[in-house]
Length: 264
Image (tube, rainbow, N blue to C red; front, side, top):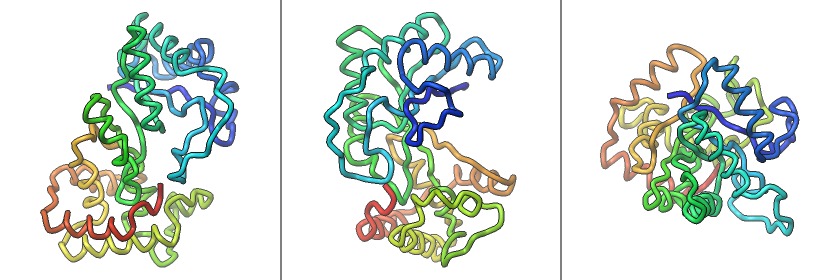
């Protein structure tokens, strides 16, 4: 399966992604054709909207900040543009990323109302440190058939336990990119220590336990992983064979009740 994305407005307006992040027909066309050229193909199996045009509470917070101004480009504008390229055979399926329950349901409503293709996937973070997908979006996934492509399943590697007690392993992501602090809060570190303790007491690899937890969720279609070394990749692949016991799952839930959303 070959997939790519078109980026909406990045939080830091990173022009290296694309000069204009507007999700209208012109910019989606430019982004899509650039992806097709780079990937040396004439179509994509899945094309996702990476960030919404509007401000959301997807990153680092649970509460929603009221926004008075509606975006100039609507979800209908974006969906109609994506539909055009789907009907032209350039993309097979449409998805979203870093979206909210409102955004997903709005896309689905507009698709049904205007006889446009429905989105089929949502790529959002999901891990032991960030289970906010379970609030609202899991229900949407079940009843609307929009499955999760889970990313940050290891929380930038934090759930391996390698950053505990202030450790900064050479070459590790959080060592190289210290500005990414989403998973380094005091609450996150306490939660990680508790999850690592569960894994060790049951003879499990902490990373494999974390991945197995994500994979077993009924709303998860696939987990997206990043590995720096072949050893890490092998360990990630081996997690596919791991089924967590009821005892382990109960202990995970007990920790979750104490540290519910340490890294939304």
